[in-house]
Image (cartoon, one colour):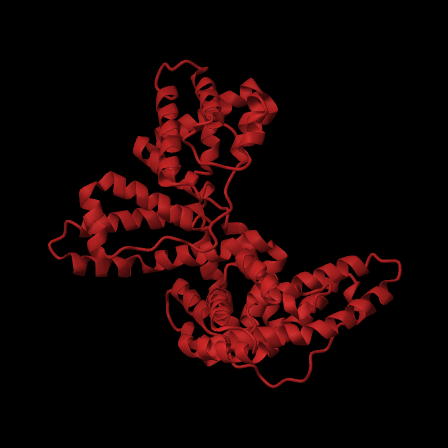
Length: 485
């Protein structure tokens, strides 16, 4: 069940290493899968796999590609098919990808791949993929709209749904995505012919609620894991907990953050059917055991017997009000460049996060990046102390402005209604820019409101918001080079 690209024989290590034997290996794997799943299930999996891989492709482009792949498997996996059938068919598919009027998903790297020949060309084409959608585009239609489209053409309805859903939530583990799409299509096919469709949809949606939320949540955490890597995800999860429960210590929360990062590293790319659900449930039990006695909100979330629902409840908890704490102790130079330097840096950033609970992940990630960069530069410098002292002074100048800007924007967004937030934005921008006309002010208000509604959430899309933070905070650098720009 891994990626659809292996159906084009391009992703197999065996193919690269073993020439003719590798080709036979890939053909056998594809045919084994085709026969085990049957044509329709194989086709469904191929739609999902390629919609994940080419998340910006149109439905028509995916349909063309899927049609060719299924036809190739059906023809070449038939009893008595010529052993060279699959190799010849996949070569023809590569050639079609390279033609000027190719009906397959467009990609900027296609021309470079097509300049190569033979196996190299196939492997190059196989490696092409679109970046995942950070802001899922799929919006579920009303029950009436679902049934109208389903009754008009059930097969086209299912194909379009699979494409839209898989391209929007392509970072969710494949088994989660398969389970979610399967139960959704089952619900539609059952309820659209039911004598009481409204009651039917209500019952079915309730039954698939956990799986639906798991898809949404795992797409989010796996997007973050892919963008951040394991170490930064550990930090991200640590600060998330610290802001929900600022009274807890670094020692209380860091092991839980490490455990969460381990779950994501094991399950985001896993094809084991229940990896994410099983491991997240185990993780939630640890969180509840460690924190429910310390905080009423966590205790409330941990009351239920369904551990996945408990996890969703904890994830949805807003940040707590920032406690009044003494100024955070900065790590010493020798600590930053010691074997435990990364841990000392994380501890300091943790202390900042729990003192500024309205500063979300996307801003704190900038602090993590700056800290990592400084340690990388200075700990290998000839004069480590001089380098760190210089960076410490620069950070001392930038950090208050950075935190003030983040607190001002996201603190107000969290506290106020959206209309009041926009009103407050307009007032502060008018004070800052008295010469600006109504049109410019209106544009700036909309830009910042859009930024806040997308990036002030603690579940914000990481790469999209990182670039937005850089441009939004550019003026804090006063035109110079900036550690936090």
